[in-house]
Length: 423
Length: 209
Image 1: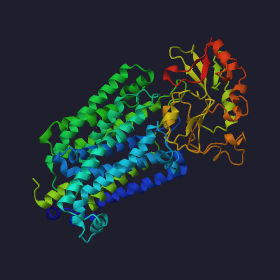
Image 2: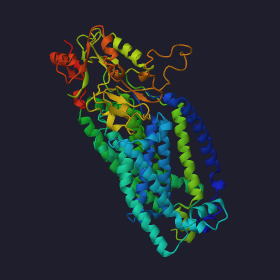
Image 3: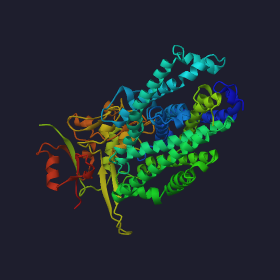
Image 4: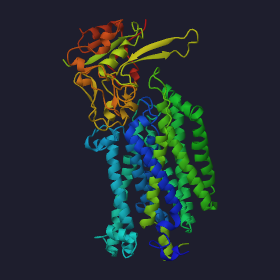
């Protein structure tokens, strides 16, 4: 394999060679998405299927989905940079990159959902100390900043090494490290210290601020008893860990396969074990959330749970959230070290679909119920604008990932191949 | 003494004629698809055809003493006036719909369309009330009943009060024991709707006899 000799900066991993069809597909999806977003900008929220009864739809679903992916991927990176789990070192930088991109995608979704997109800056300009959302917006900004800085420090030694390269990525590396090219042991030690501190600050930020906070957005709504539980923010954080780990596995396996690179099965099986643990914890909390919610016998919550378990959402709940998204992955992941990369890819992909279903079942079922008997039921169905713009934004995230892994030295497995210690 | 505006709706007198809804729409230039005041029909699930029992409740904004919509607004676009009216600042509202999810009475509506514009409105008078205080709101923002603050400020009663042909609605200062509304609430033992939501509404309902 030519990649093995050169590592980051190798001519073998250049823009066109492995991802031409991926780029083409993503650009087509993004063009379609841009058209749909244009329709939304011109037509306002009237182009959605939303009503005054169901004011939140798929954009909010994908917003919380991507916030969760981001928080999960980041927390995984802290296992390495803060808690010293060097077993996962190789995926650390990729985790930070995925976390950063997911957060950008999440914010794009919530921007689309804002009735007055032109007033998004009001969310920072005006405030309200009692508003969870007002706090959230500020936490998101801090978090993105922290992710970018931490990712920079994680990549710095590699960026400095790439400076000499006569390619676009060499020039990018030189621009990024203009005044920061010191690779002395003292400077590297300082980098590690910065990353430990940022990672440690990031943990409460990601847990309480970013995803726990996103769960709190829902949990504080007393008018929706289905959301109104103290377990809800915790469930958000745990499901974030599940989806973030699964996303990293899917992306990593996809990319390495495309680049014809040897997969580090030890690393992937380790991540599979983590995923199984997170998923088990998530399922347990979900079980308690549903059980205690049902026993509360509150009319609105009962109606919501009925629509999930035995009504309008029963197919997606039992088939996607429970069957494909939980039972099958648990069976696959429980095989542990007997799993091939393909099996792990499948399990992680199914888990992602399952968590996406979880997000749908958080937002939509309670909002279909009228808040008072006598008000109409919500009959929300997403329009083409909502679906196509969502696809476009996800394609944008994927494009950023493929380009990011091409132009930035985030791949730890490639480093191993370079130094020849890949087992 | 501080003022606390409130309303009582006598369900025993209400004939569900929707005059309050129409008066509200005309007074406040409320666009299509939104009802600030809504007369809800609630069917008793235990009743069977042909003896169906339907209860009717007019529902304005409850102008709660502890409005759940107010603390959740990220831009402080919701505020409570000294007289208790819960107001929406349309110049601040970013249309995030947090408040709609938080209202247990479904009193908040969203202007998905540009009001009084587009198809069907060409060349017609756009809206009824020229008062700039109730100029049609822009699209993509949340709006709701204001107890007709523009009339209250002129010492008048909300439009729905005068429009009610059976005099089922009373409005005034709840703190003043001699006000019409306070006396009626006491006499009719009126109660707020769903008090267990904890929002302490200032709209009271007198029970059907």
